[in-house]
Structures are given as structure tokens and as C-alpha cells.
Image 1 (tube, rainbow, N blue to C red):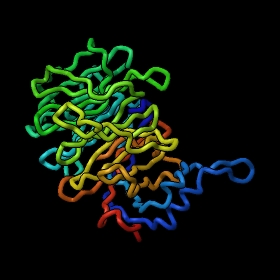
Image 2 (tube, rainbow, N blue to C red):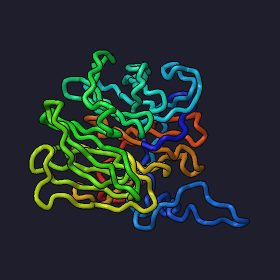
Image 3 (spheres, rainbow, N blue to C red):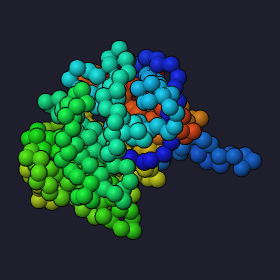
Image 4 (cartoon, one colour):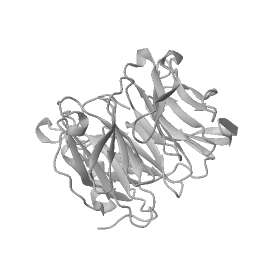
Length: 353
């Protein structure tokens, strides 16, 4: 979960995403980022040639915030959105990493604060079937971070991982047994000290699953919870892990499914078909994979053409509709938006207008 600038508001507006022509939009995106006459450079991040012709959809703005938004405290400053997740009531929960707040956006787009006083910091959340909110976060990586739970109203905080453990928790995926996986966002390419760990349903037994990682970031489970996905931001790797049992890798089950080109890969989400969505930070883009880890499509933020709202950190998939809600922040540190993409059909053919 990169720590940079975030948010300013515009009025909320509801749009359905309109599929773009892969032949036009994606090909144009692939050519962007090259040198222009007189030494100018395109503000739109270039898409690698291997991904440029994937079926492509363009999301549309759905809700906007700024650093004066009352639910964020309204005092100004930097804001970064992360960790969107839907609860059983259809509310979209997400976090502001800078203030450590958890926010709730109702289906009719009323914004309220779930958790405001949170010195532990925050990077990601997951919602347990019983309604509890599992929170991963840190303020300073050198001081370690925490994993704790709260009730849907923000009360009843219970700490599971203490800062003294030395982990830097960034993202969470809850399994069908009641345990959970979390990413430990430590290390770099010189010192591979990060990883992914499993916490058993007793909320006490912690087992390392993946080690030797550079900035472990997103984690997600397949619909049947037999496959764990994880991203490694420092080395641009997507890990695909076949699980023998919760917290245990099957024989020959740990593989590199994909190596990203120049992207700062961030959070992950999976849909009911087993497709995987990876947020590409600083690119205004989400890359979509099939259950094997093969790229099958992408979703673009429309503002990326002007070099704006490139801070795509994460996304949530709406139960039932399959619509994708992407959180992103602007480079000036004053604005953030939630974008909505309604994907028609599947990714087997290029999308058309």
C-alpha cells in the first residue's frame, strides 16, 4: 500500500462503465508514454505491448471525496483510499490510510465514519461472515503493525497481531474456516524479509506461508478457498499458491503466475468465477487474470489520459452484479475518487462500445 498523496472532491455522480474498443483505446494507450516533439512526454502511463491489446473497459466516476470531507475529519491534509469491501447490507466500506479511518458508503451513497480514532494506522480490511471487520495496518514500518477486529459499528476492538511481533500487515483474506491470511509488507529487493502468513481460527497460531518477499502486498482467495494469490510489489510478481489445507502449501503448489512489467502491483480481489483483479499503482489501471493467472482483460481509469488519478490501490467486486469499484487518488494529494466499471459478458472477446 504505497504511502503518497490523496484526495479532493467533486460531486458524486453515478455512471455505468462503458466498454471501450480494445482496438482503439488499448492500442492508443500502448503508444502513450513515448517522447513527444520538443522533448515533451505523454502524461498517460504506457501499457506494455503484451497487455495493450487485451479486452479493455473504461470505468466511470461514481463517488468523489476531498481532504475537507467531513467524514474524513474535514481538516485538510493528505488522503489515500484503500481496502474497499462490501458488507452483507450492500454498503461499501473503505479506508483512509493517512488518518486510519474506516468509512462506510451506503447503496444510496451516504458517507459515514465507522472508525475515526485509530492510532494503529490502516492499510486494508476484510469483512468476516459474522460481520466483524478485520483491520490490517501500520504507521511506521520500523515500529511494526497490527491486525485487529472491530464490530460493524466500530466498537469492541480486539487486537490479534501486536506491534511487538514485528510484522507490517498490509492486506487480509479470510478463509472458510475462520482463519485468515495477511501480507507482511517488509523488505526490498536487497533484503527479502517480507512474506504472507496464516492465522488459524483460534486467532493465536501464526504460521509463515511465503517468506523471502520484497514488499508483500495484496492477498486474495479463490471462491473455493483452495488457491491463494499474493502480490509482491518490490519484484513485480504474482504468486499462485495451491493449498493442501488452510495455511499449508500443496506439494509443488507455490508458483509465479505472472511477472509485471514496470508496474507497482498493489491489492488483489477475486470474483465468483475465480478471475483475479490486480490494481496497478501509479498506472490508473486494473489487470484481470483467469483462474490460472493468464491476463484476460483490463480496466482503465479515464483520467489516466491526463496523468490524473493514477493511484489505483485496490478494488471491490459487488456481490450479484459483478461490478468493479476501484479506489484511486490524485497526484496532487487533494482528491480521490471511487470508479465503477460494469463488465458486460466476459473477457473472451474485445469489448466494443
